[in-house]
Length: 436
Image (cartoon, rainbow, N blue to C red; front, side, top):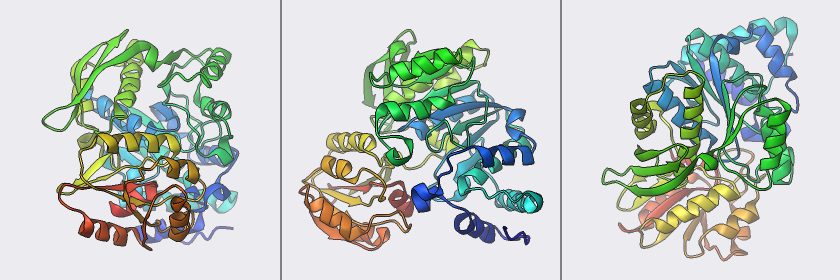
């Protein structure tokens, strides 16, 4: 039975959320709930708030956070009041729940948790951290009277706590091998779980056509009479380069055409996320959404300013150049390594930490051997011990020192680096979070 004494401070509420509720980001698979029972009970408790506004559902293995933020930025520039739910957060819990780029207030977080605890005295639901946070987001978006909420899937799709909505549109960015202990060991098995967000009669845009997964998405779409579109069928990237202002300039040709659209997210991989967004926006326009080209261009050129997105090939300093990125699985790290390869630098300093339920050998196999490594660990139970990481890394020719805290590794790397060097921070979302 939960203790239902009223909590008056934001700090006490955060302690309750983090320490009293099972949280996947800290405990890993032990916190994962393989049913929607709690989510449906919470939805009933708060009188189905998600039915009060339109929604767009965004899933996939990599890129779903970036796509969610791009979609939110475009719709906001088109004049809509936009809720945005994403996870995990990097600096502040409230990053998960935003309206028009502004985080939920501390008072609203406290009010919701106290409201839940009072309502729950009779029902005794025992939600996870994620389940309660999703309910908070849905309730807050209703209170704020949003026109639309962009909802990012947390893990998987079919049994994810967000998967009670009936969206205007679903987006699945791509499928990669991640969370295999929960979602399956193959791309096909993972696609089956991700396809769970495809809803009856609602269009779905898949960002990348993959031979292992496309038939699974087609079968699911046919079963529920959903229109299925693969973004790479609609547009090919014709050119992409960095402007003097430091933004990417991308052009697409095909059934949709965009010439020289400016994007403020710097990673090369974002050009493919952008294509997915452009195809999704076209589908929204076809079903009656008012989104003109000016809104698209201005929204895409100001994603960070409009939404506050963090941690995607984010520049933290120059001379030496310091960059962080939240890519943390094999596919994400491949993109990061390619980005490092094309970034001019003399020496490469790699501040790396990982969590223990990832394909660590797959990640280490990809990392550049010429790097100077600073092995570390984020302050959470799932983090792989820095010394164990250092030992594993030696098997792949990666040599460096280990540091108990991320901030210590960062401090030493900055001390060691010359002005023409590159310092990269990543391997885990939580390592990036501690630097930010």
